[in-house]
Length: 472
Image 1 (cartoon, one colour):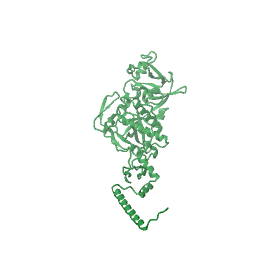
Image 2: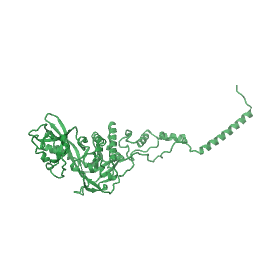
Image 3: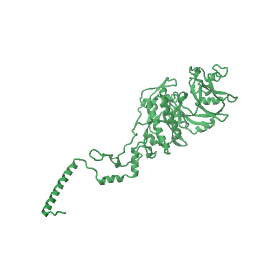
Image 4: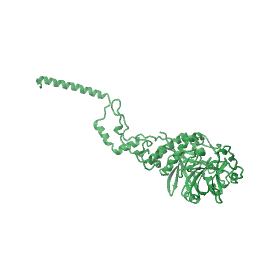
């Protein structure tokens, strides 16, 4: 049942309501003046509507570390400095503060934050570094700034086989993790140590490259490691200035080439294959008797029937004399036997006589004993040698440059400048010490003629860079 109030009563009630409403509005305005006002509905709607799907993707690219989520963009844009379009902050990234208001964001037009792009320079000191030889004896002094300088990679095409590089990177990283604690050479920082570059920095570089390659291969896309912008963003680039006391004017690294040669051979001695490769028997090797004999003395037959050291070695196979010289020089040989089988053989231990640079190969007194292996082997003692692959492996001075360094060569091929990437994962007597040369593993060849034909297209000298992962 409705109640009908007198008109005067209704009028008084209306005046009272208006009065109370005015007091409430004043109180509300006073409260708002004491706090920051939230954006209006129209402003928020405008911000959200201006963020297109393309801008959102670009914003995600800028804020996402490629090491964590590289699939958010193409290789040319991820992590590359100033390569992604700038976009306004996404409303989804605004978080409420204590007063319930959005937190402050970067104004539009200001660069969004990037990770792993801090400019890091290696500060090479002028403190003398003692360059050592194979016997770990000091030979001469250099300073870090004589050999290395901070640089950037030129914007050239980068060439390497992704699967082969990944395999060598993994093998080198595994060697560090499993064997380096017992290998003083692998733990040497070398000349780069004068600039604060540690062995851990090299392991971090390997790990980052492995992670990047695995992601790119899984997504079946060109590797980001082939993008100079990506490399310059995520790696400190150090240029290597060759130091050659005999040729002080040399301004590029000399790039020699080595190979694995496939030779015909025999399991037994024949008229054609009369030169053995030997493996030391473990029970006799411990007293290092084999260090008493040069290559020439071994070839006189000291291990053969009636010889002075008969029974202390095992003949693994027989080659021609040239086949032996190739095996000794290259470190690995692929022998094809008459029954259709084949096997790799790699150097294992030497007689302790140093390789003499410039002396004819057959006059060298250095001699190696071999073992059968399942792949081409690079650096490492005895059974722990690193498995390497052609096209992405360099042999060099692991004592003074350091094992596992990522090498980039810049050279001219067919009138076009390009970059080639590989890993310092092998060494040899000719490189201890040697601060002006690298040896490139070119491949497996059936003859010297085919080898020479192949390497005729490769550079004899090149600019060389070393890549070191920047710290986050």
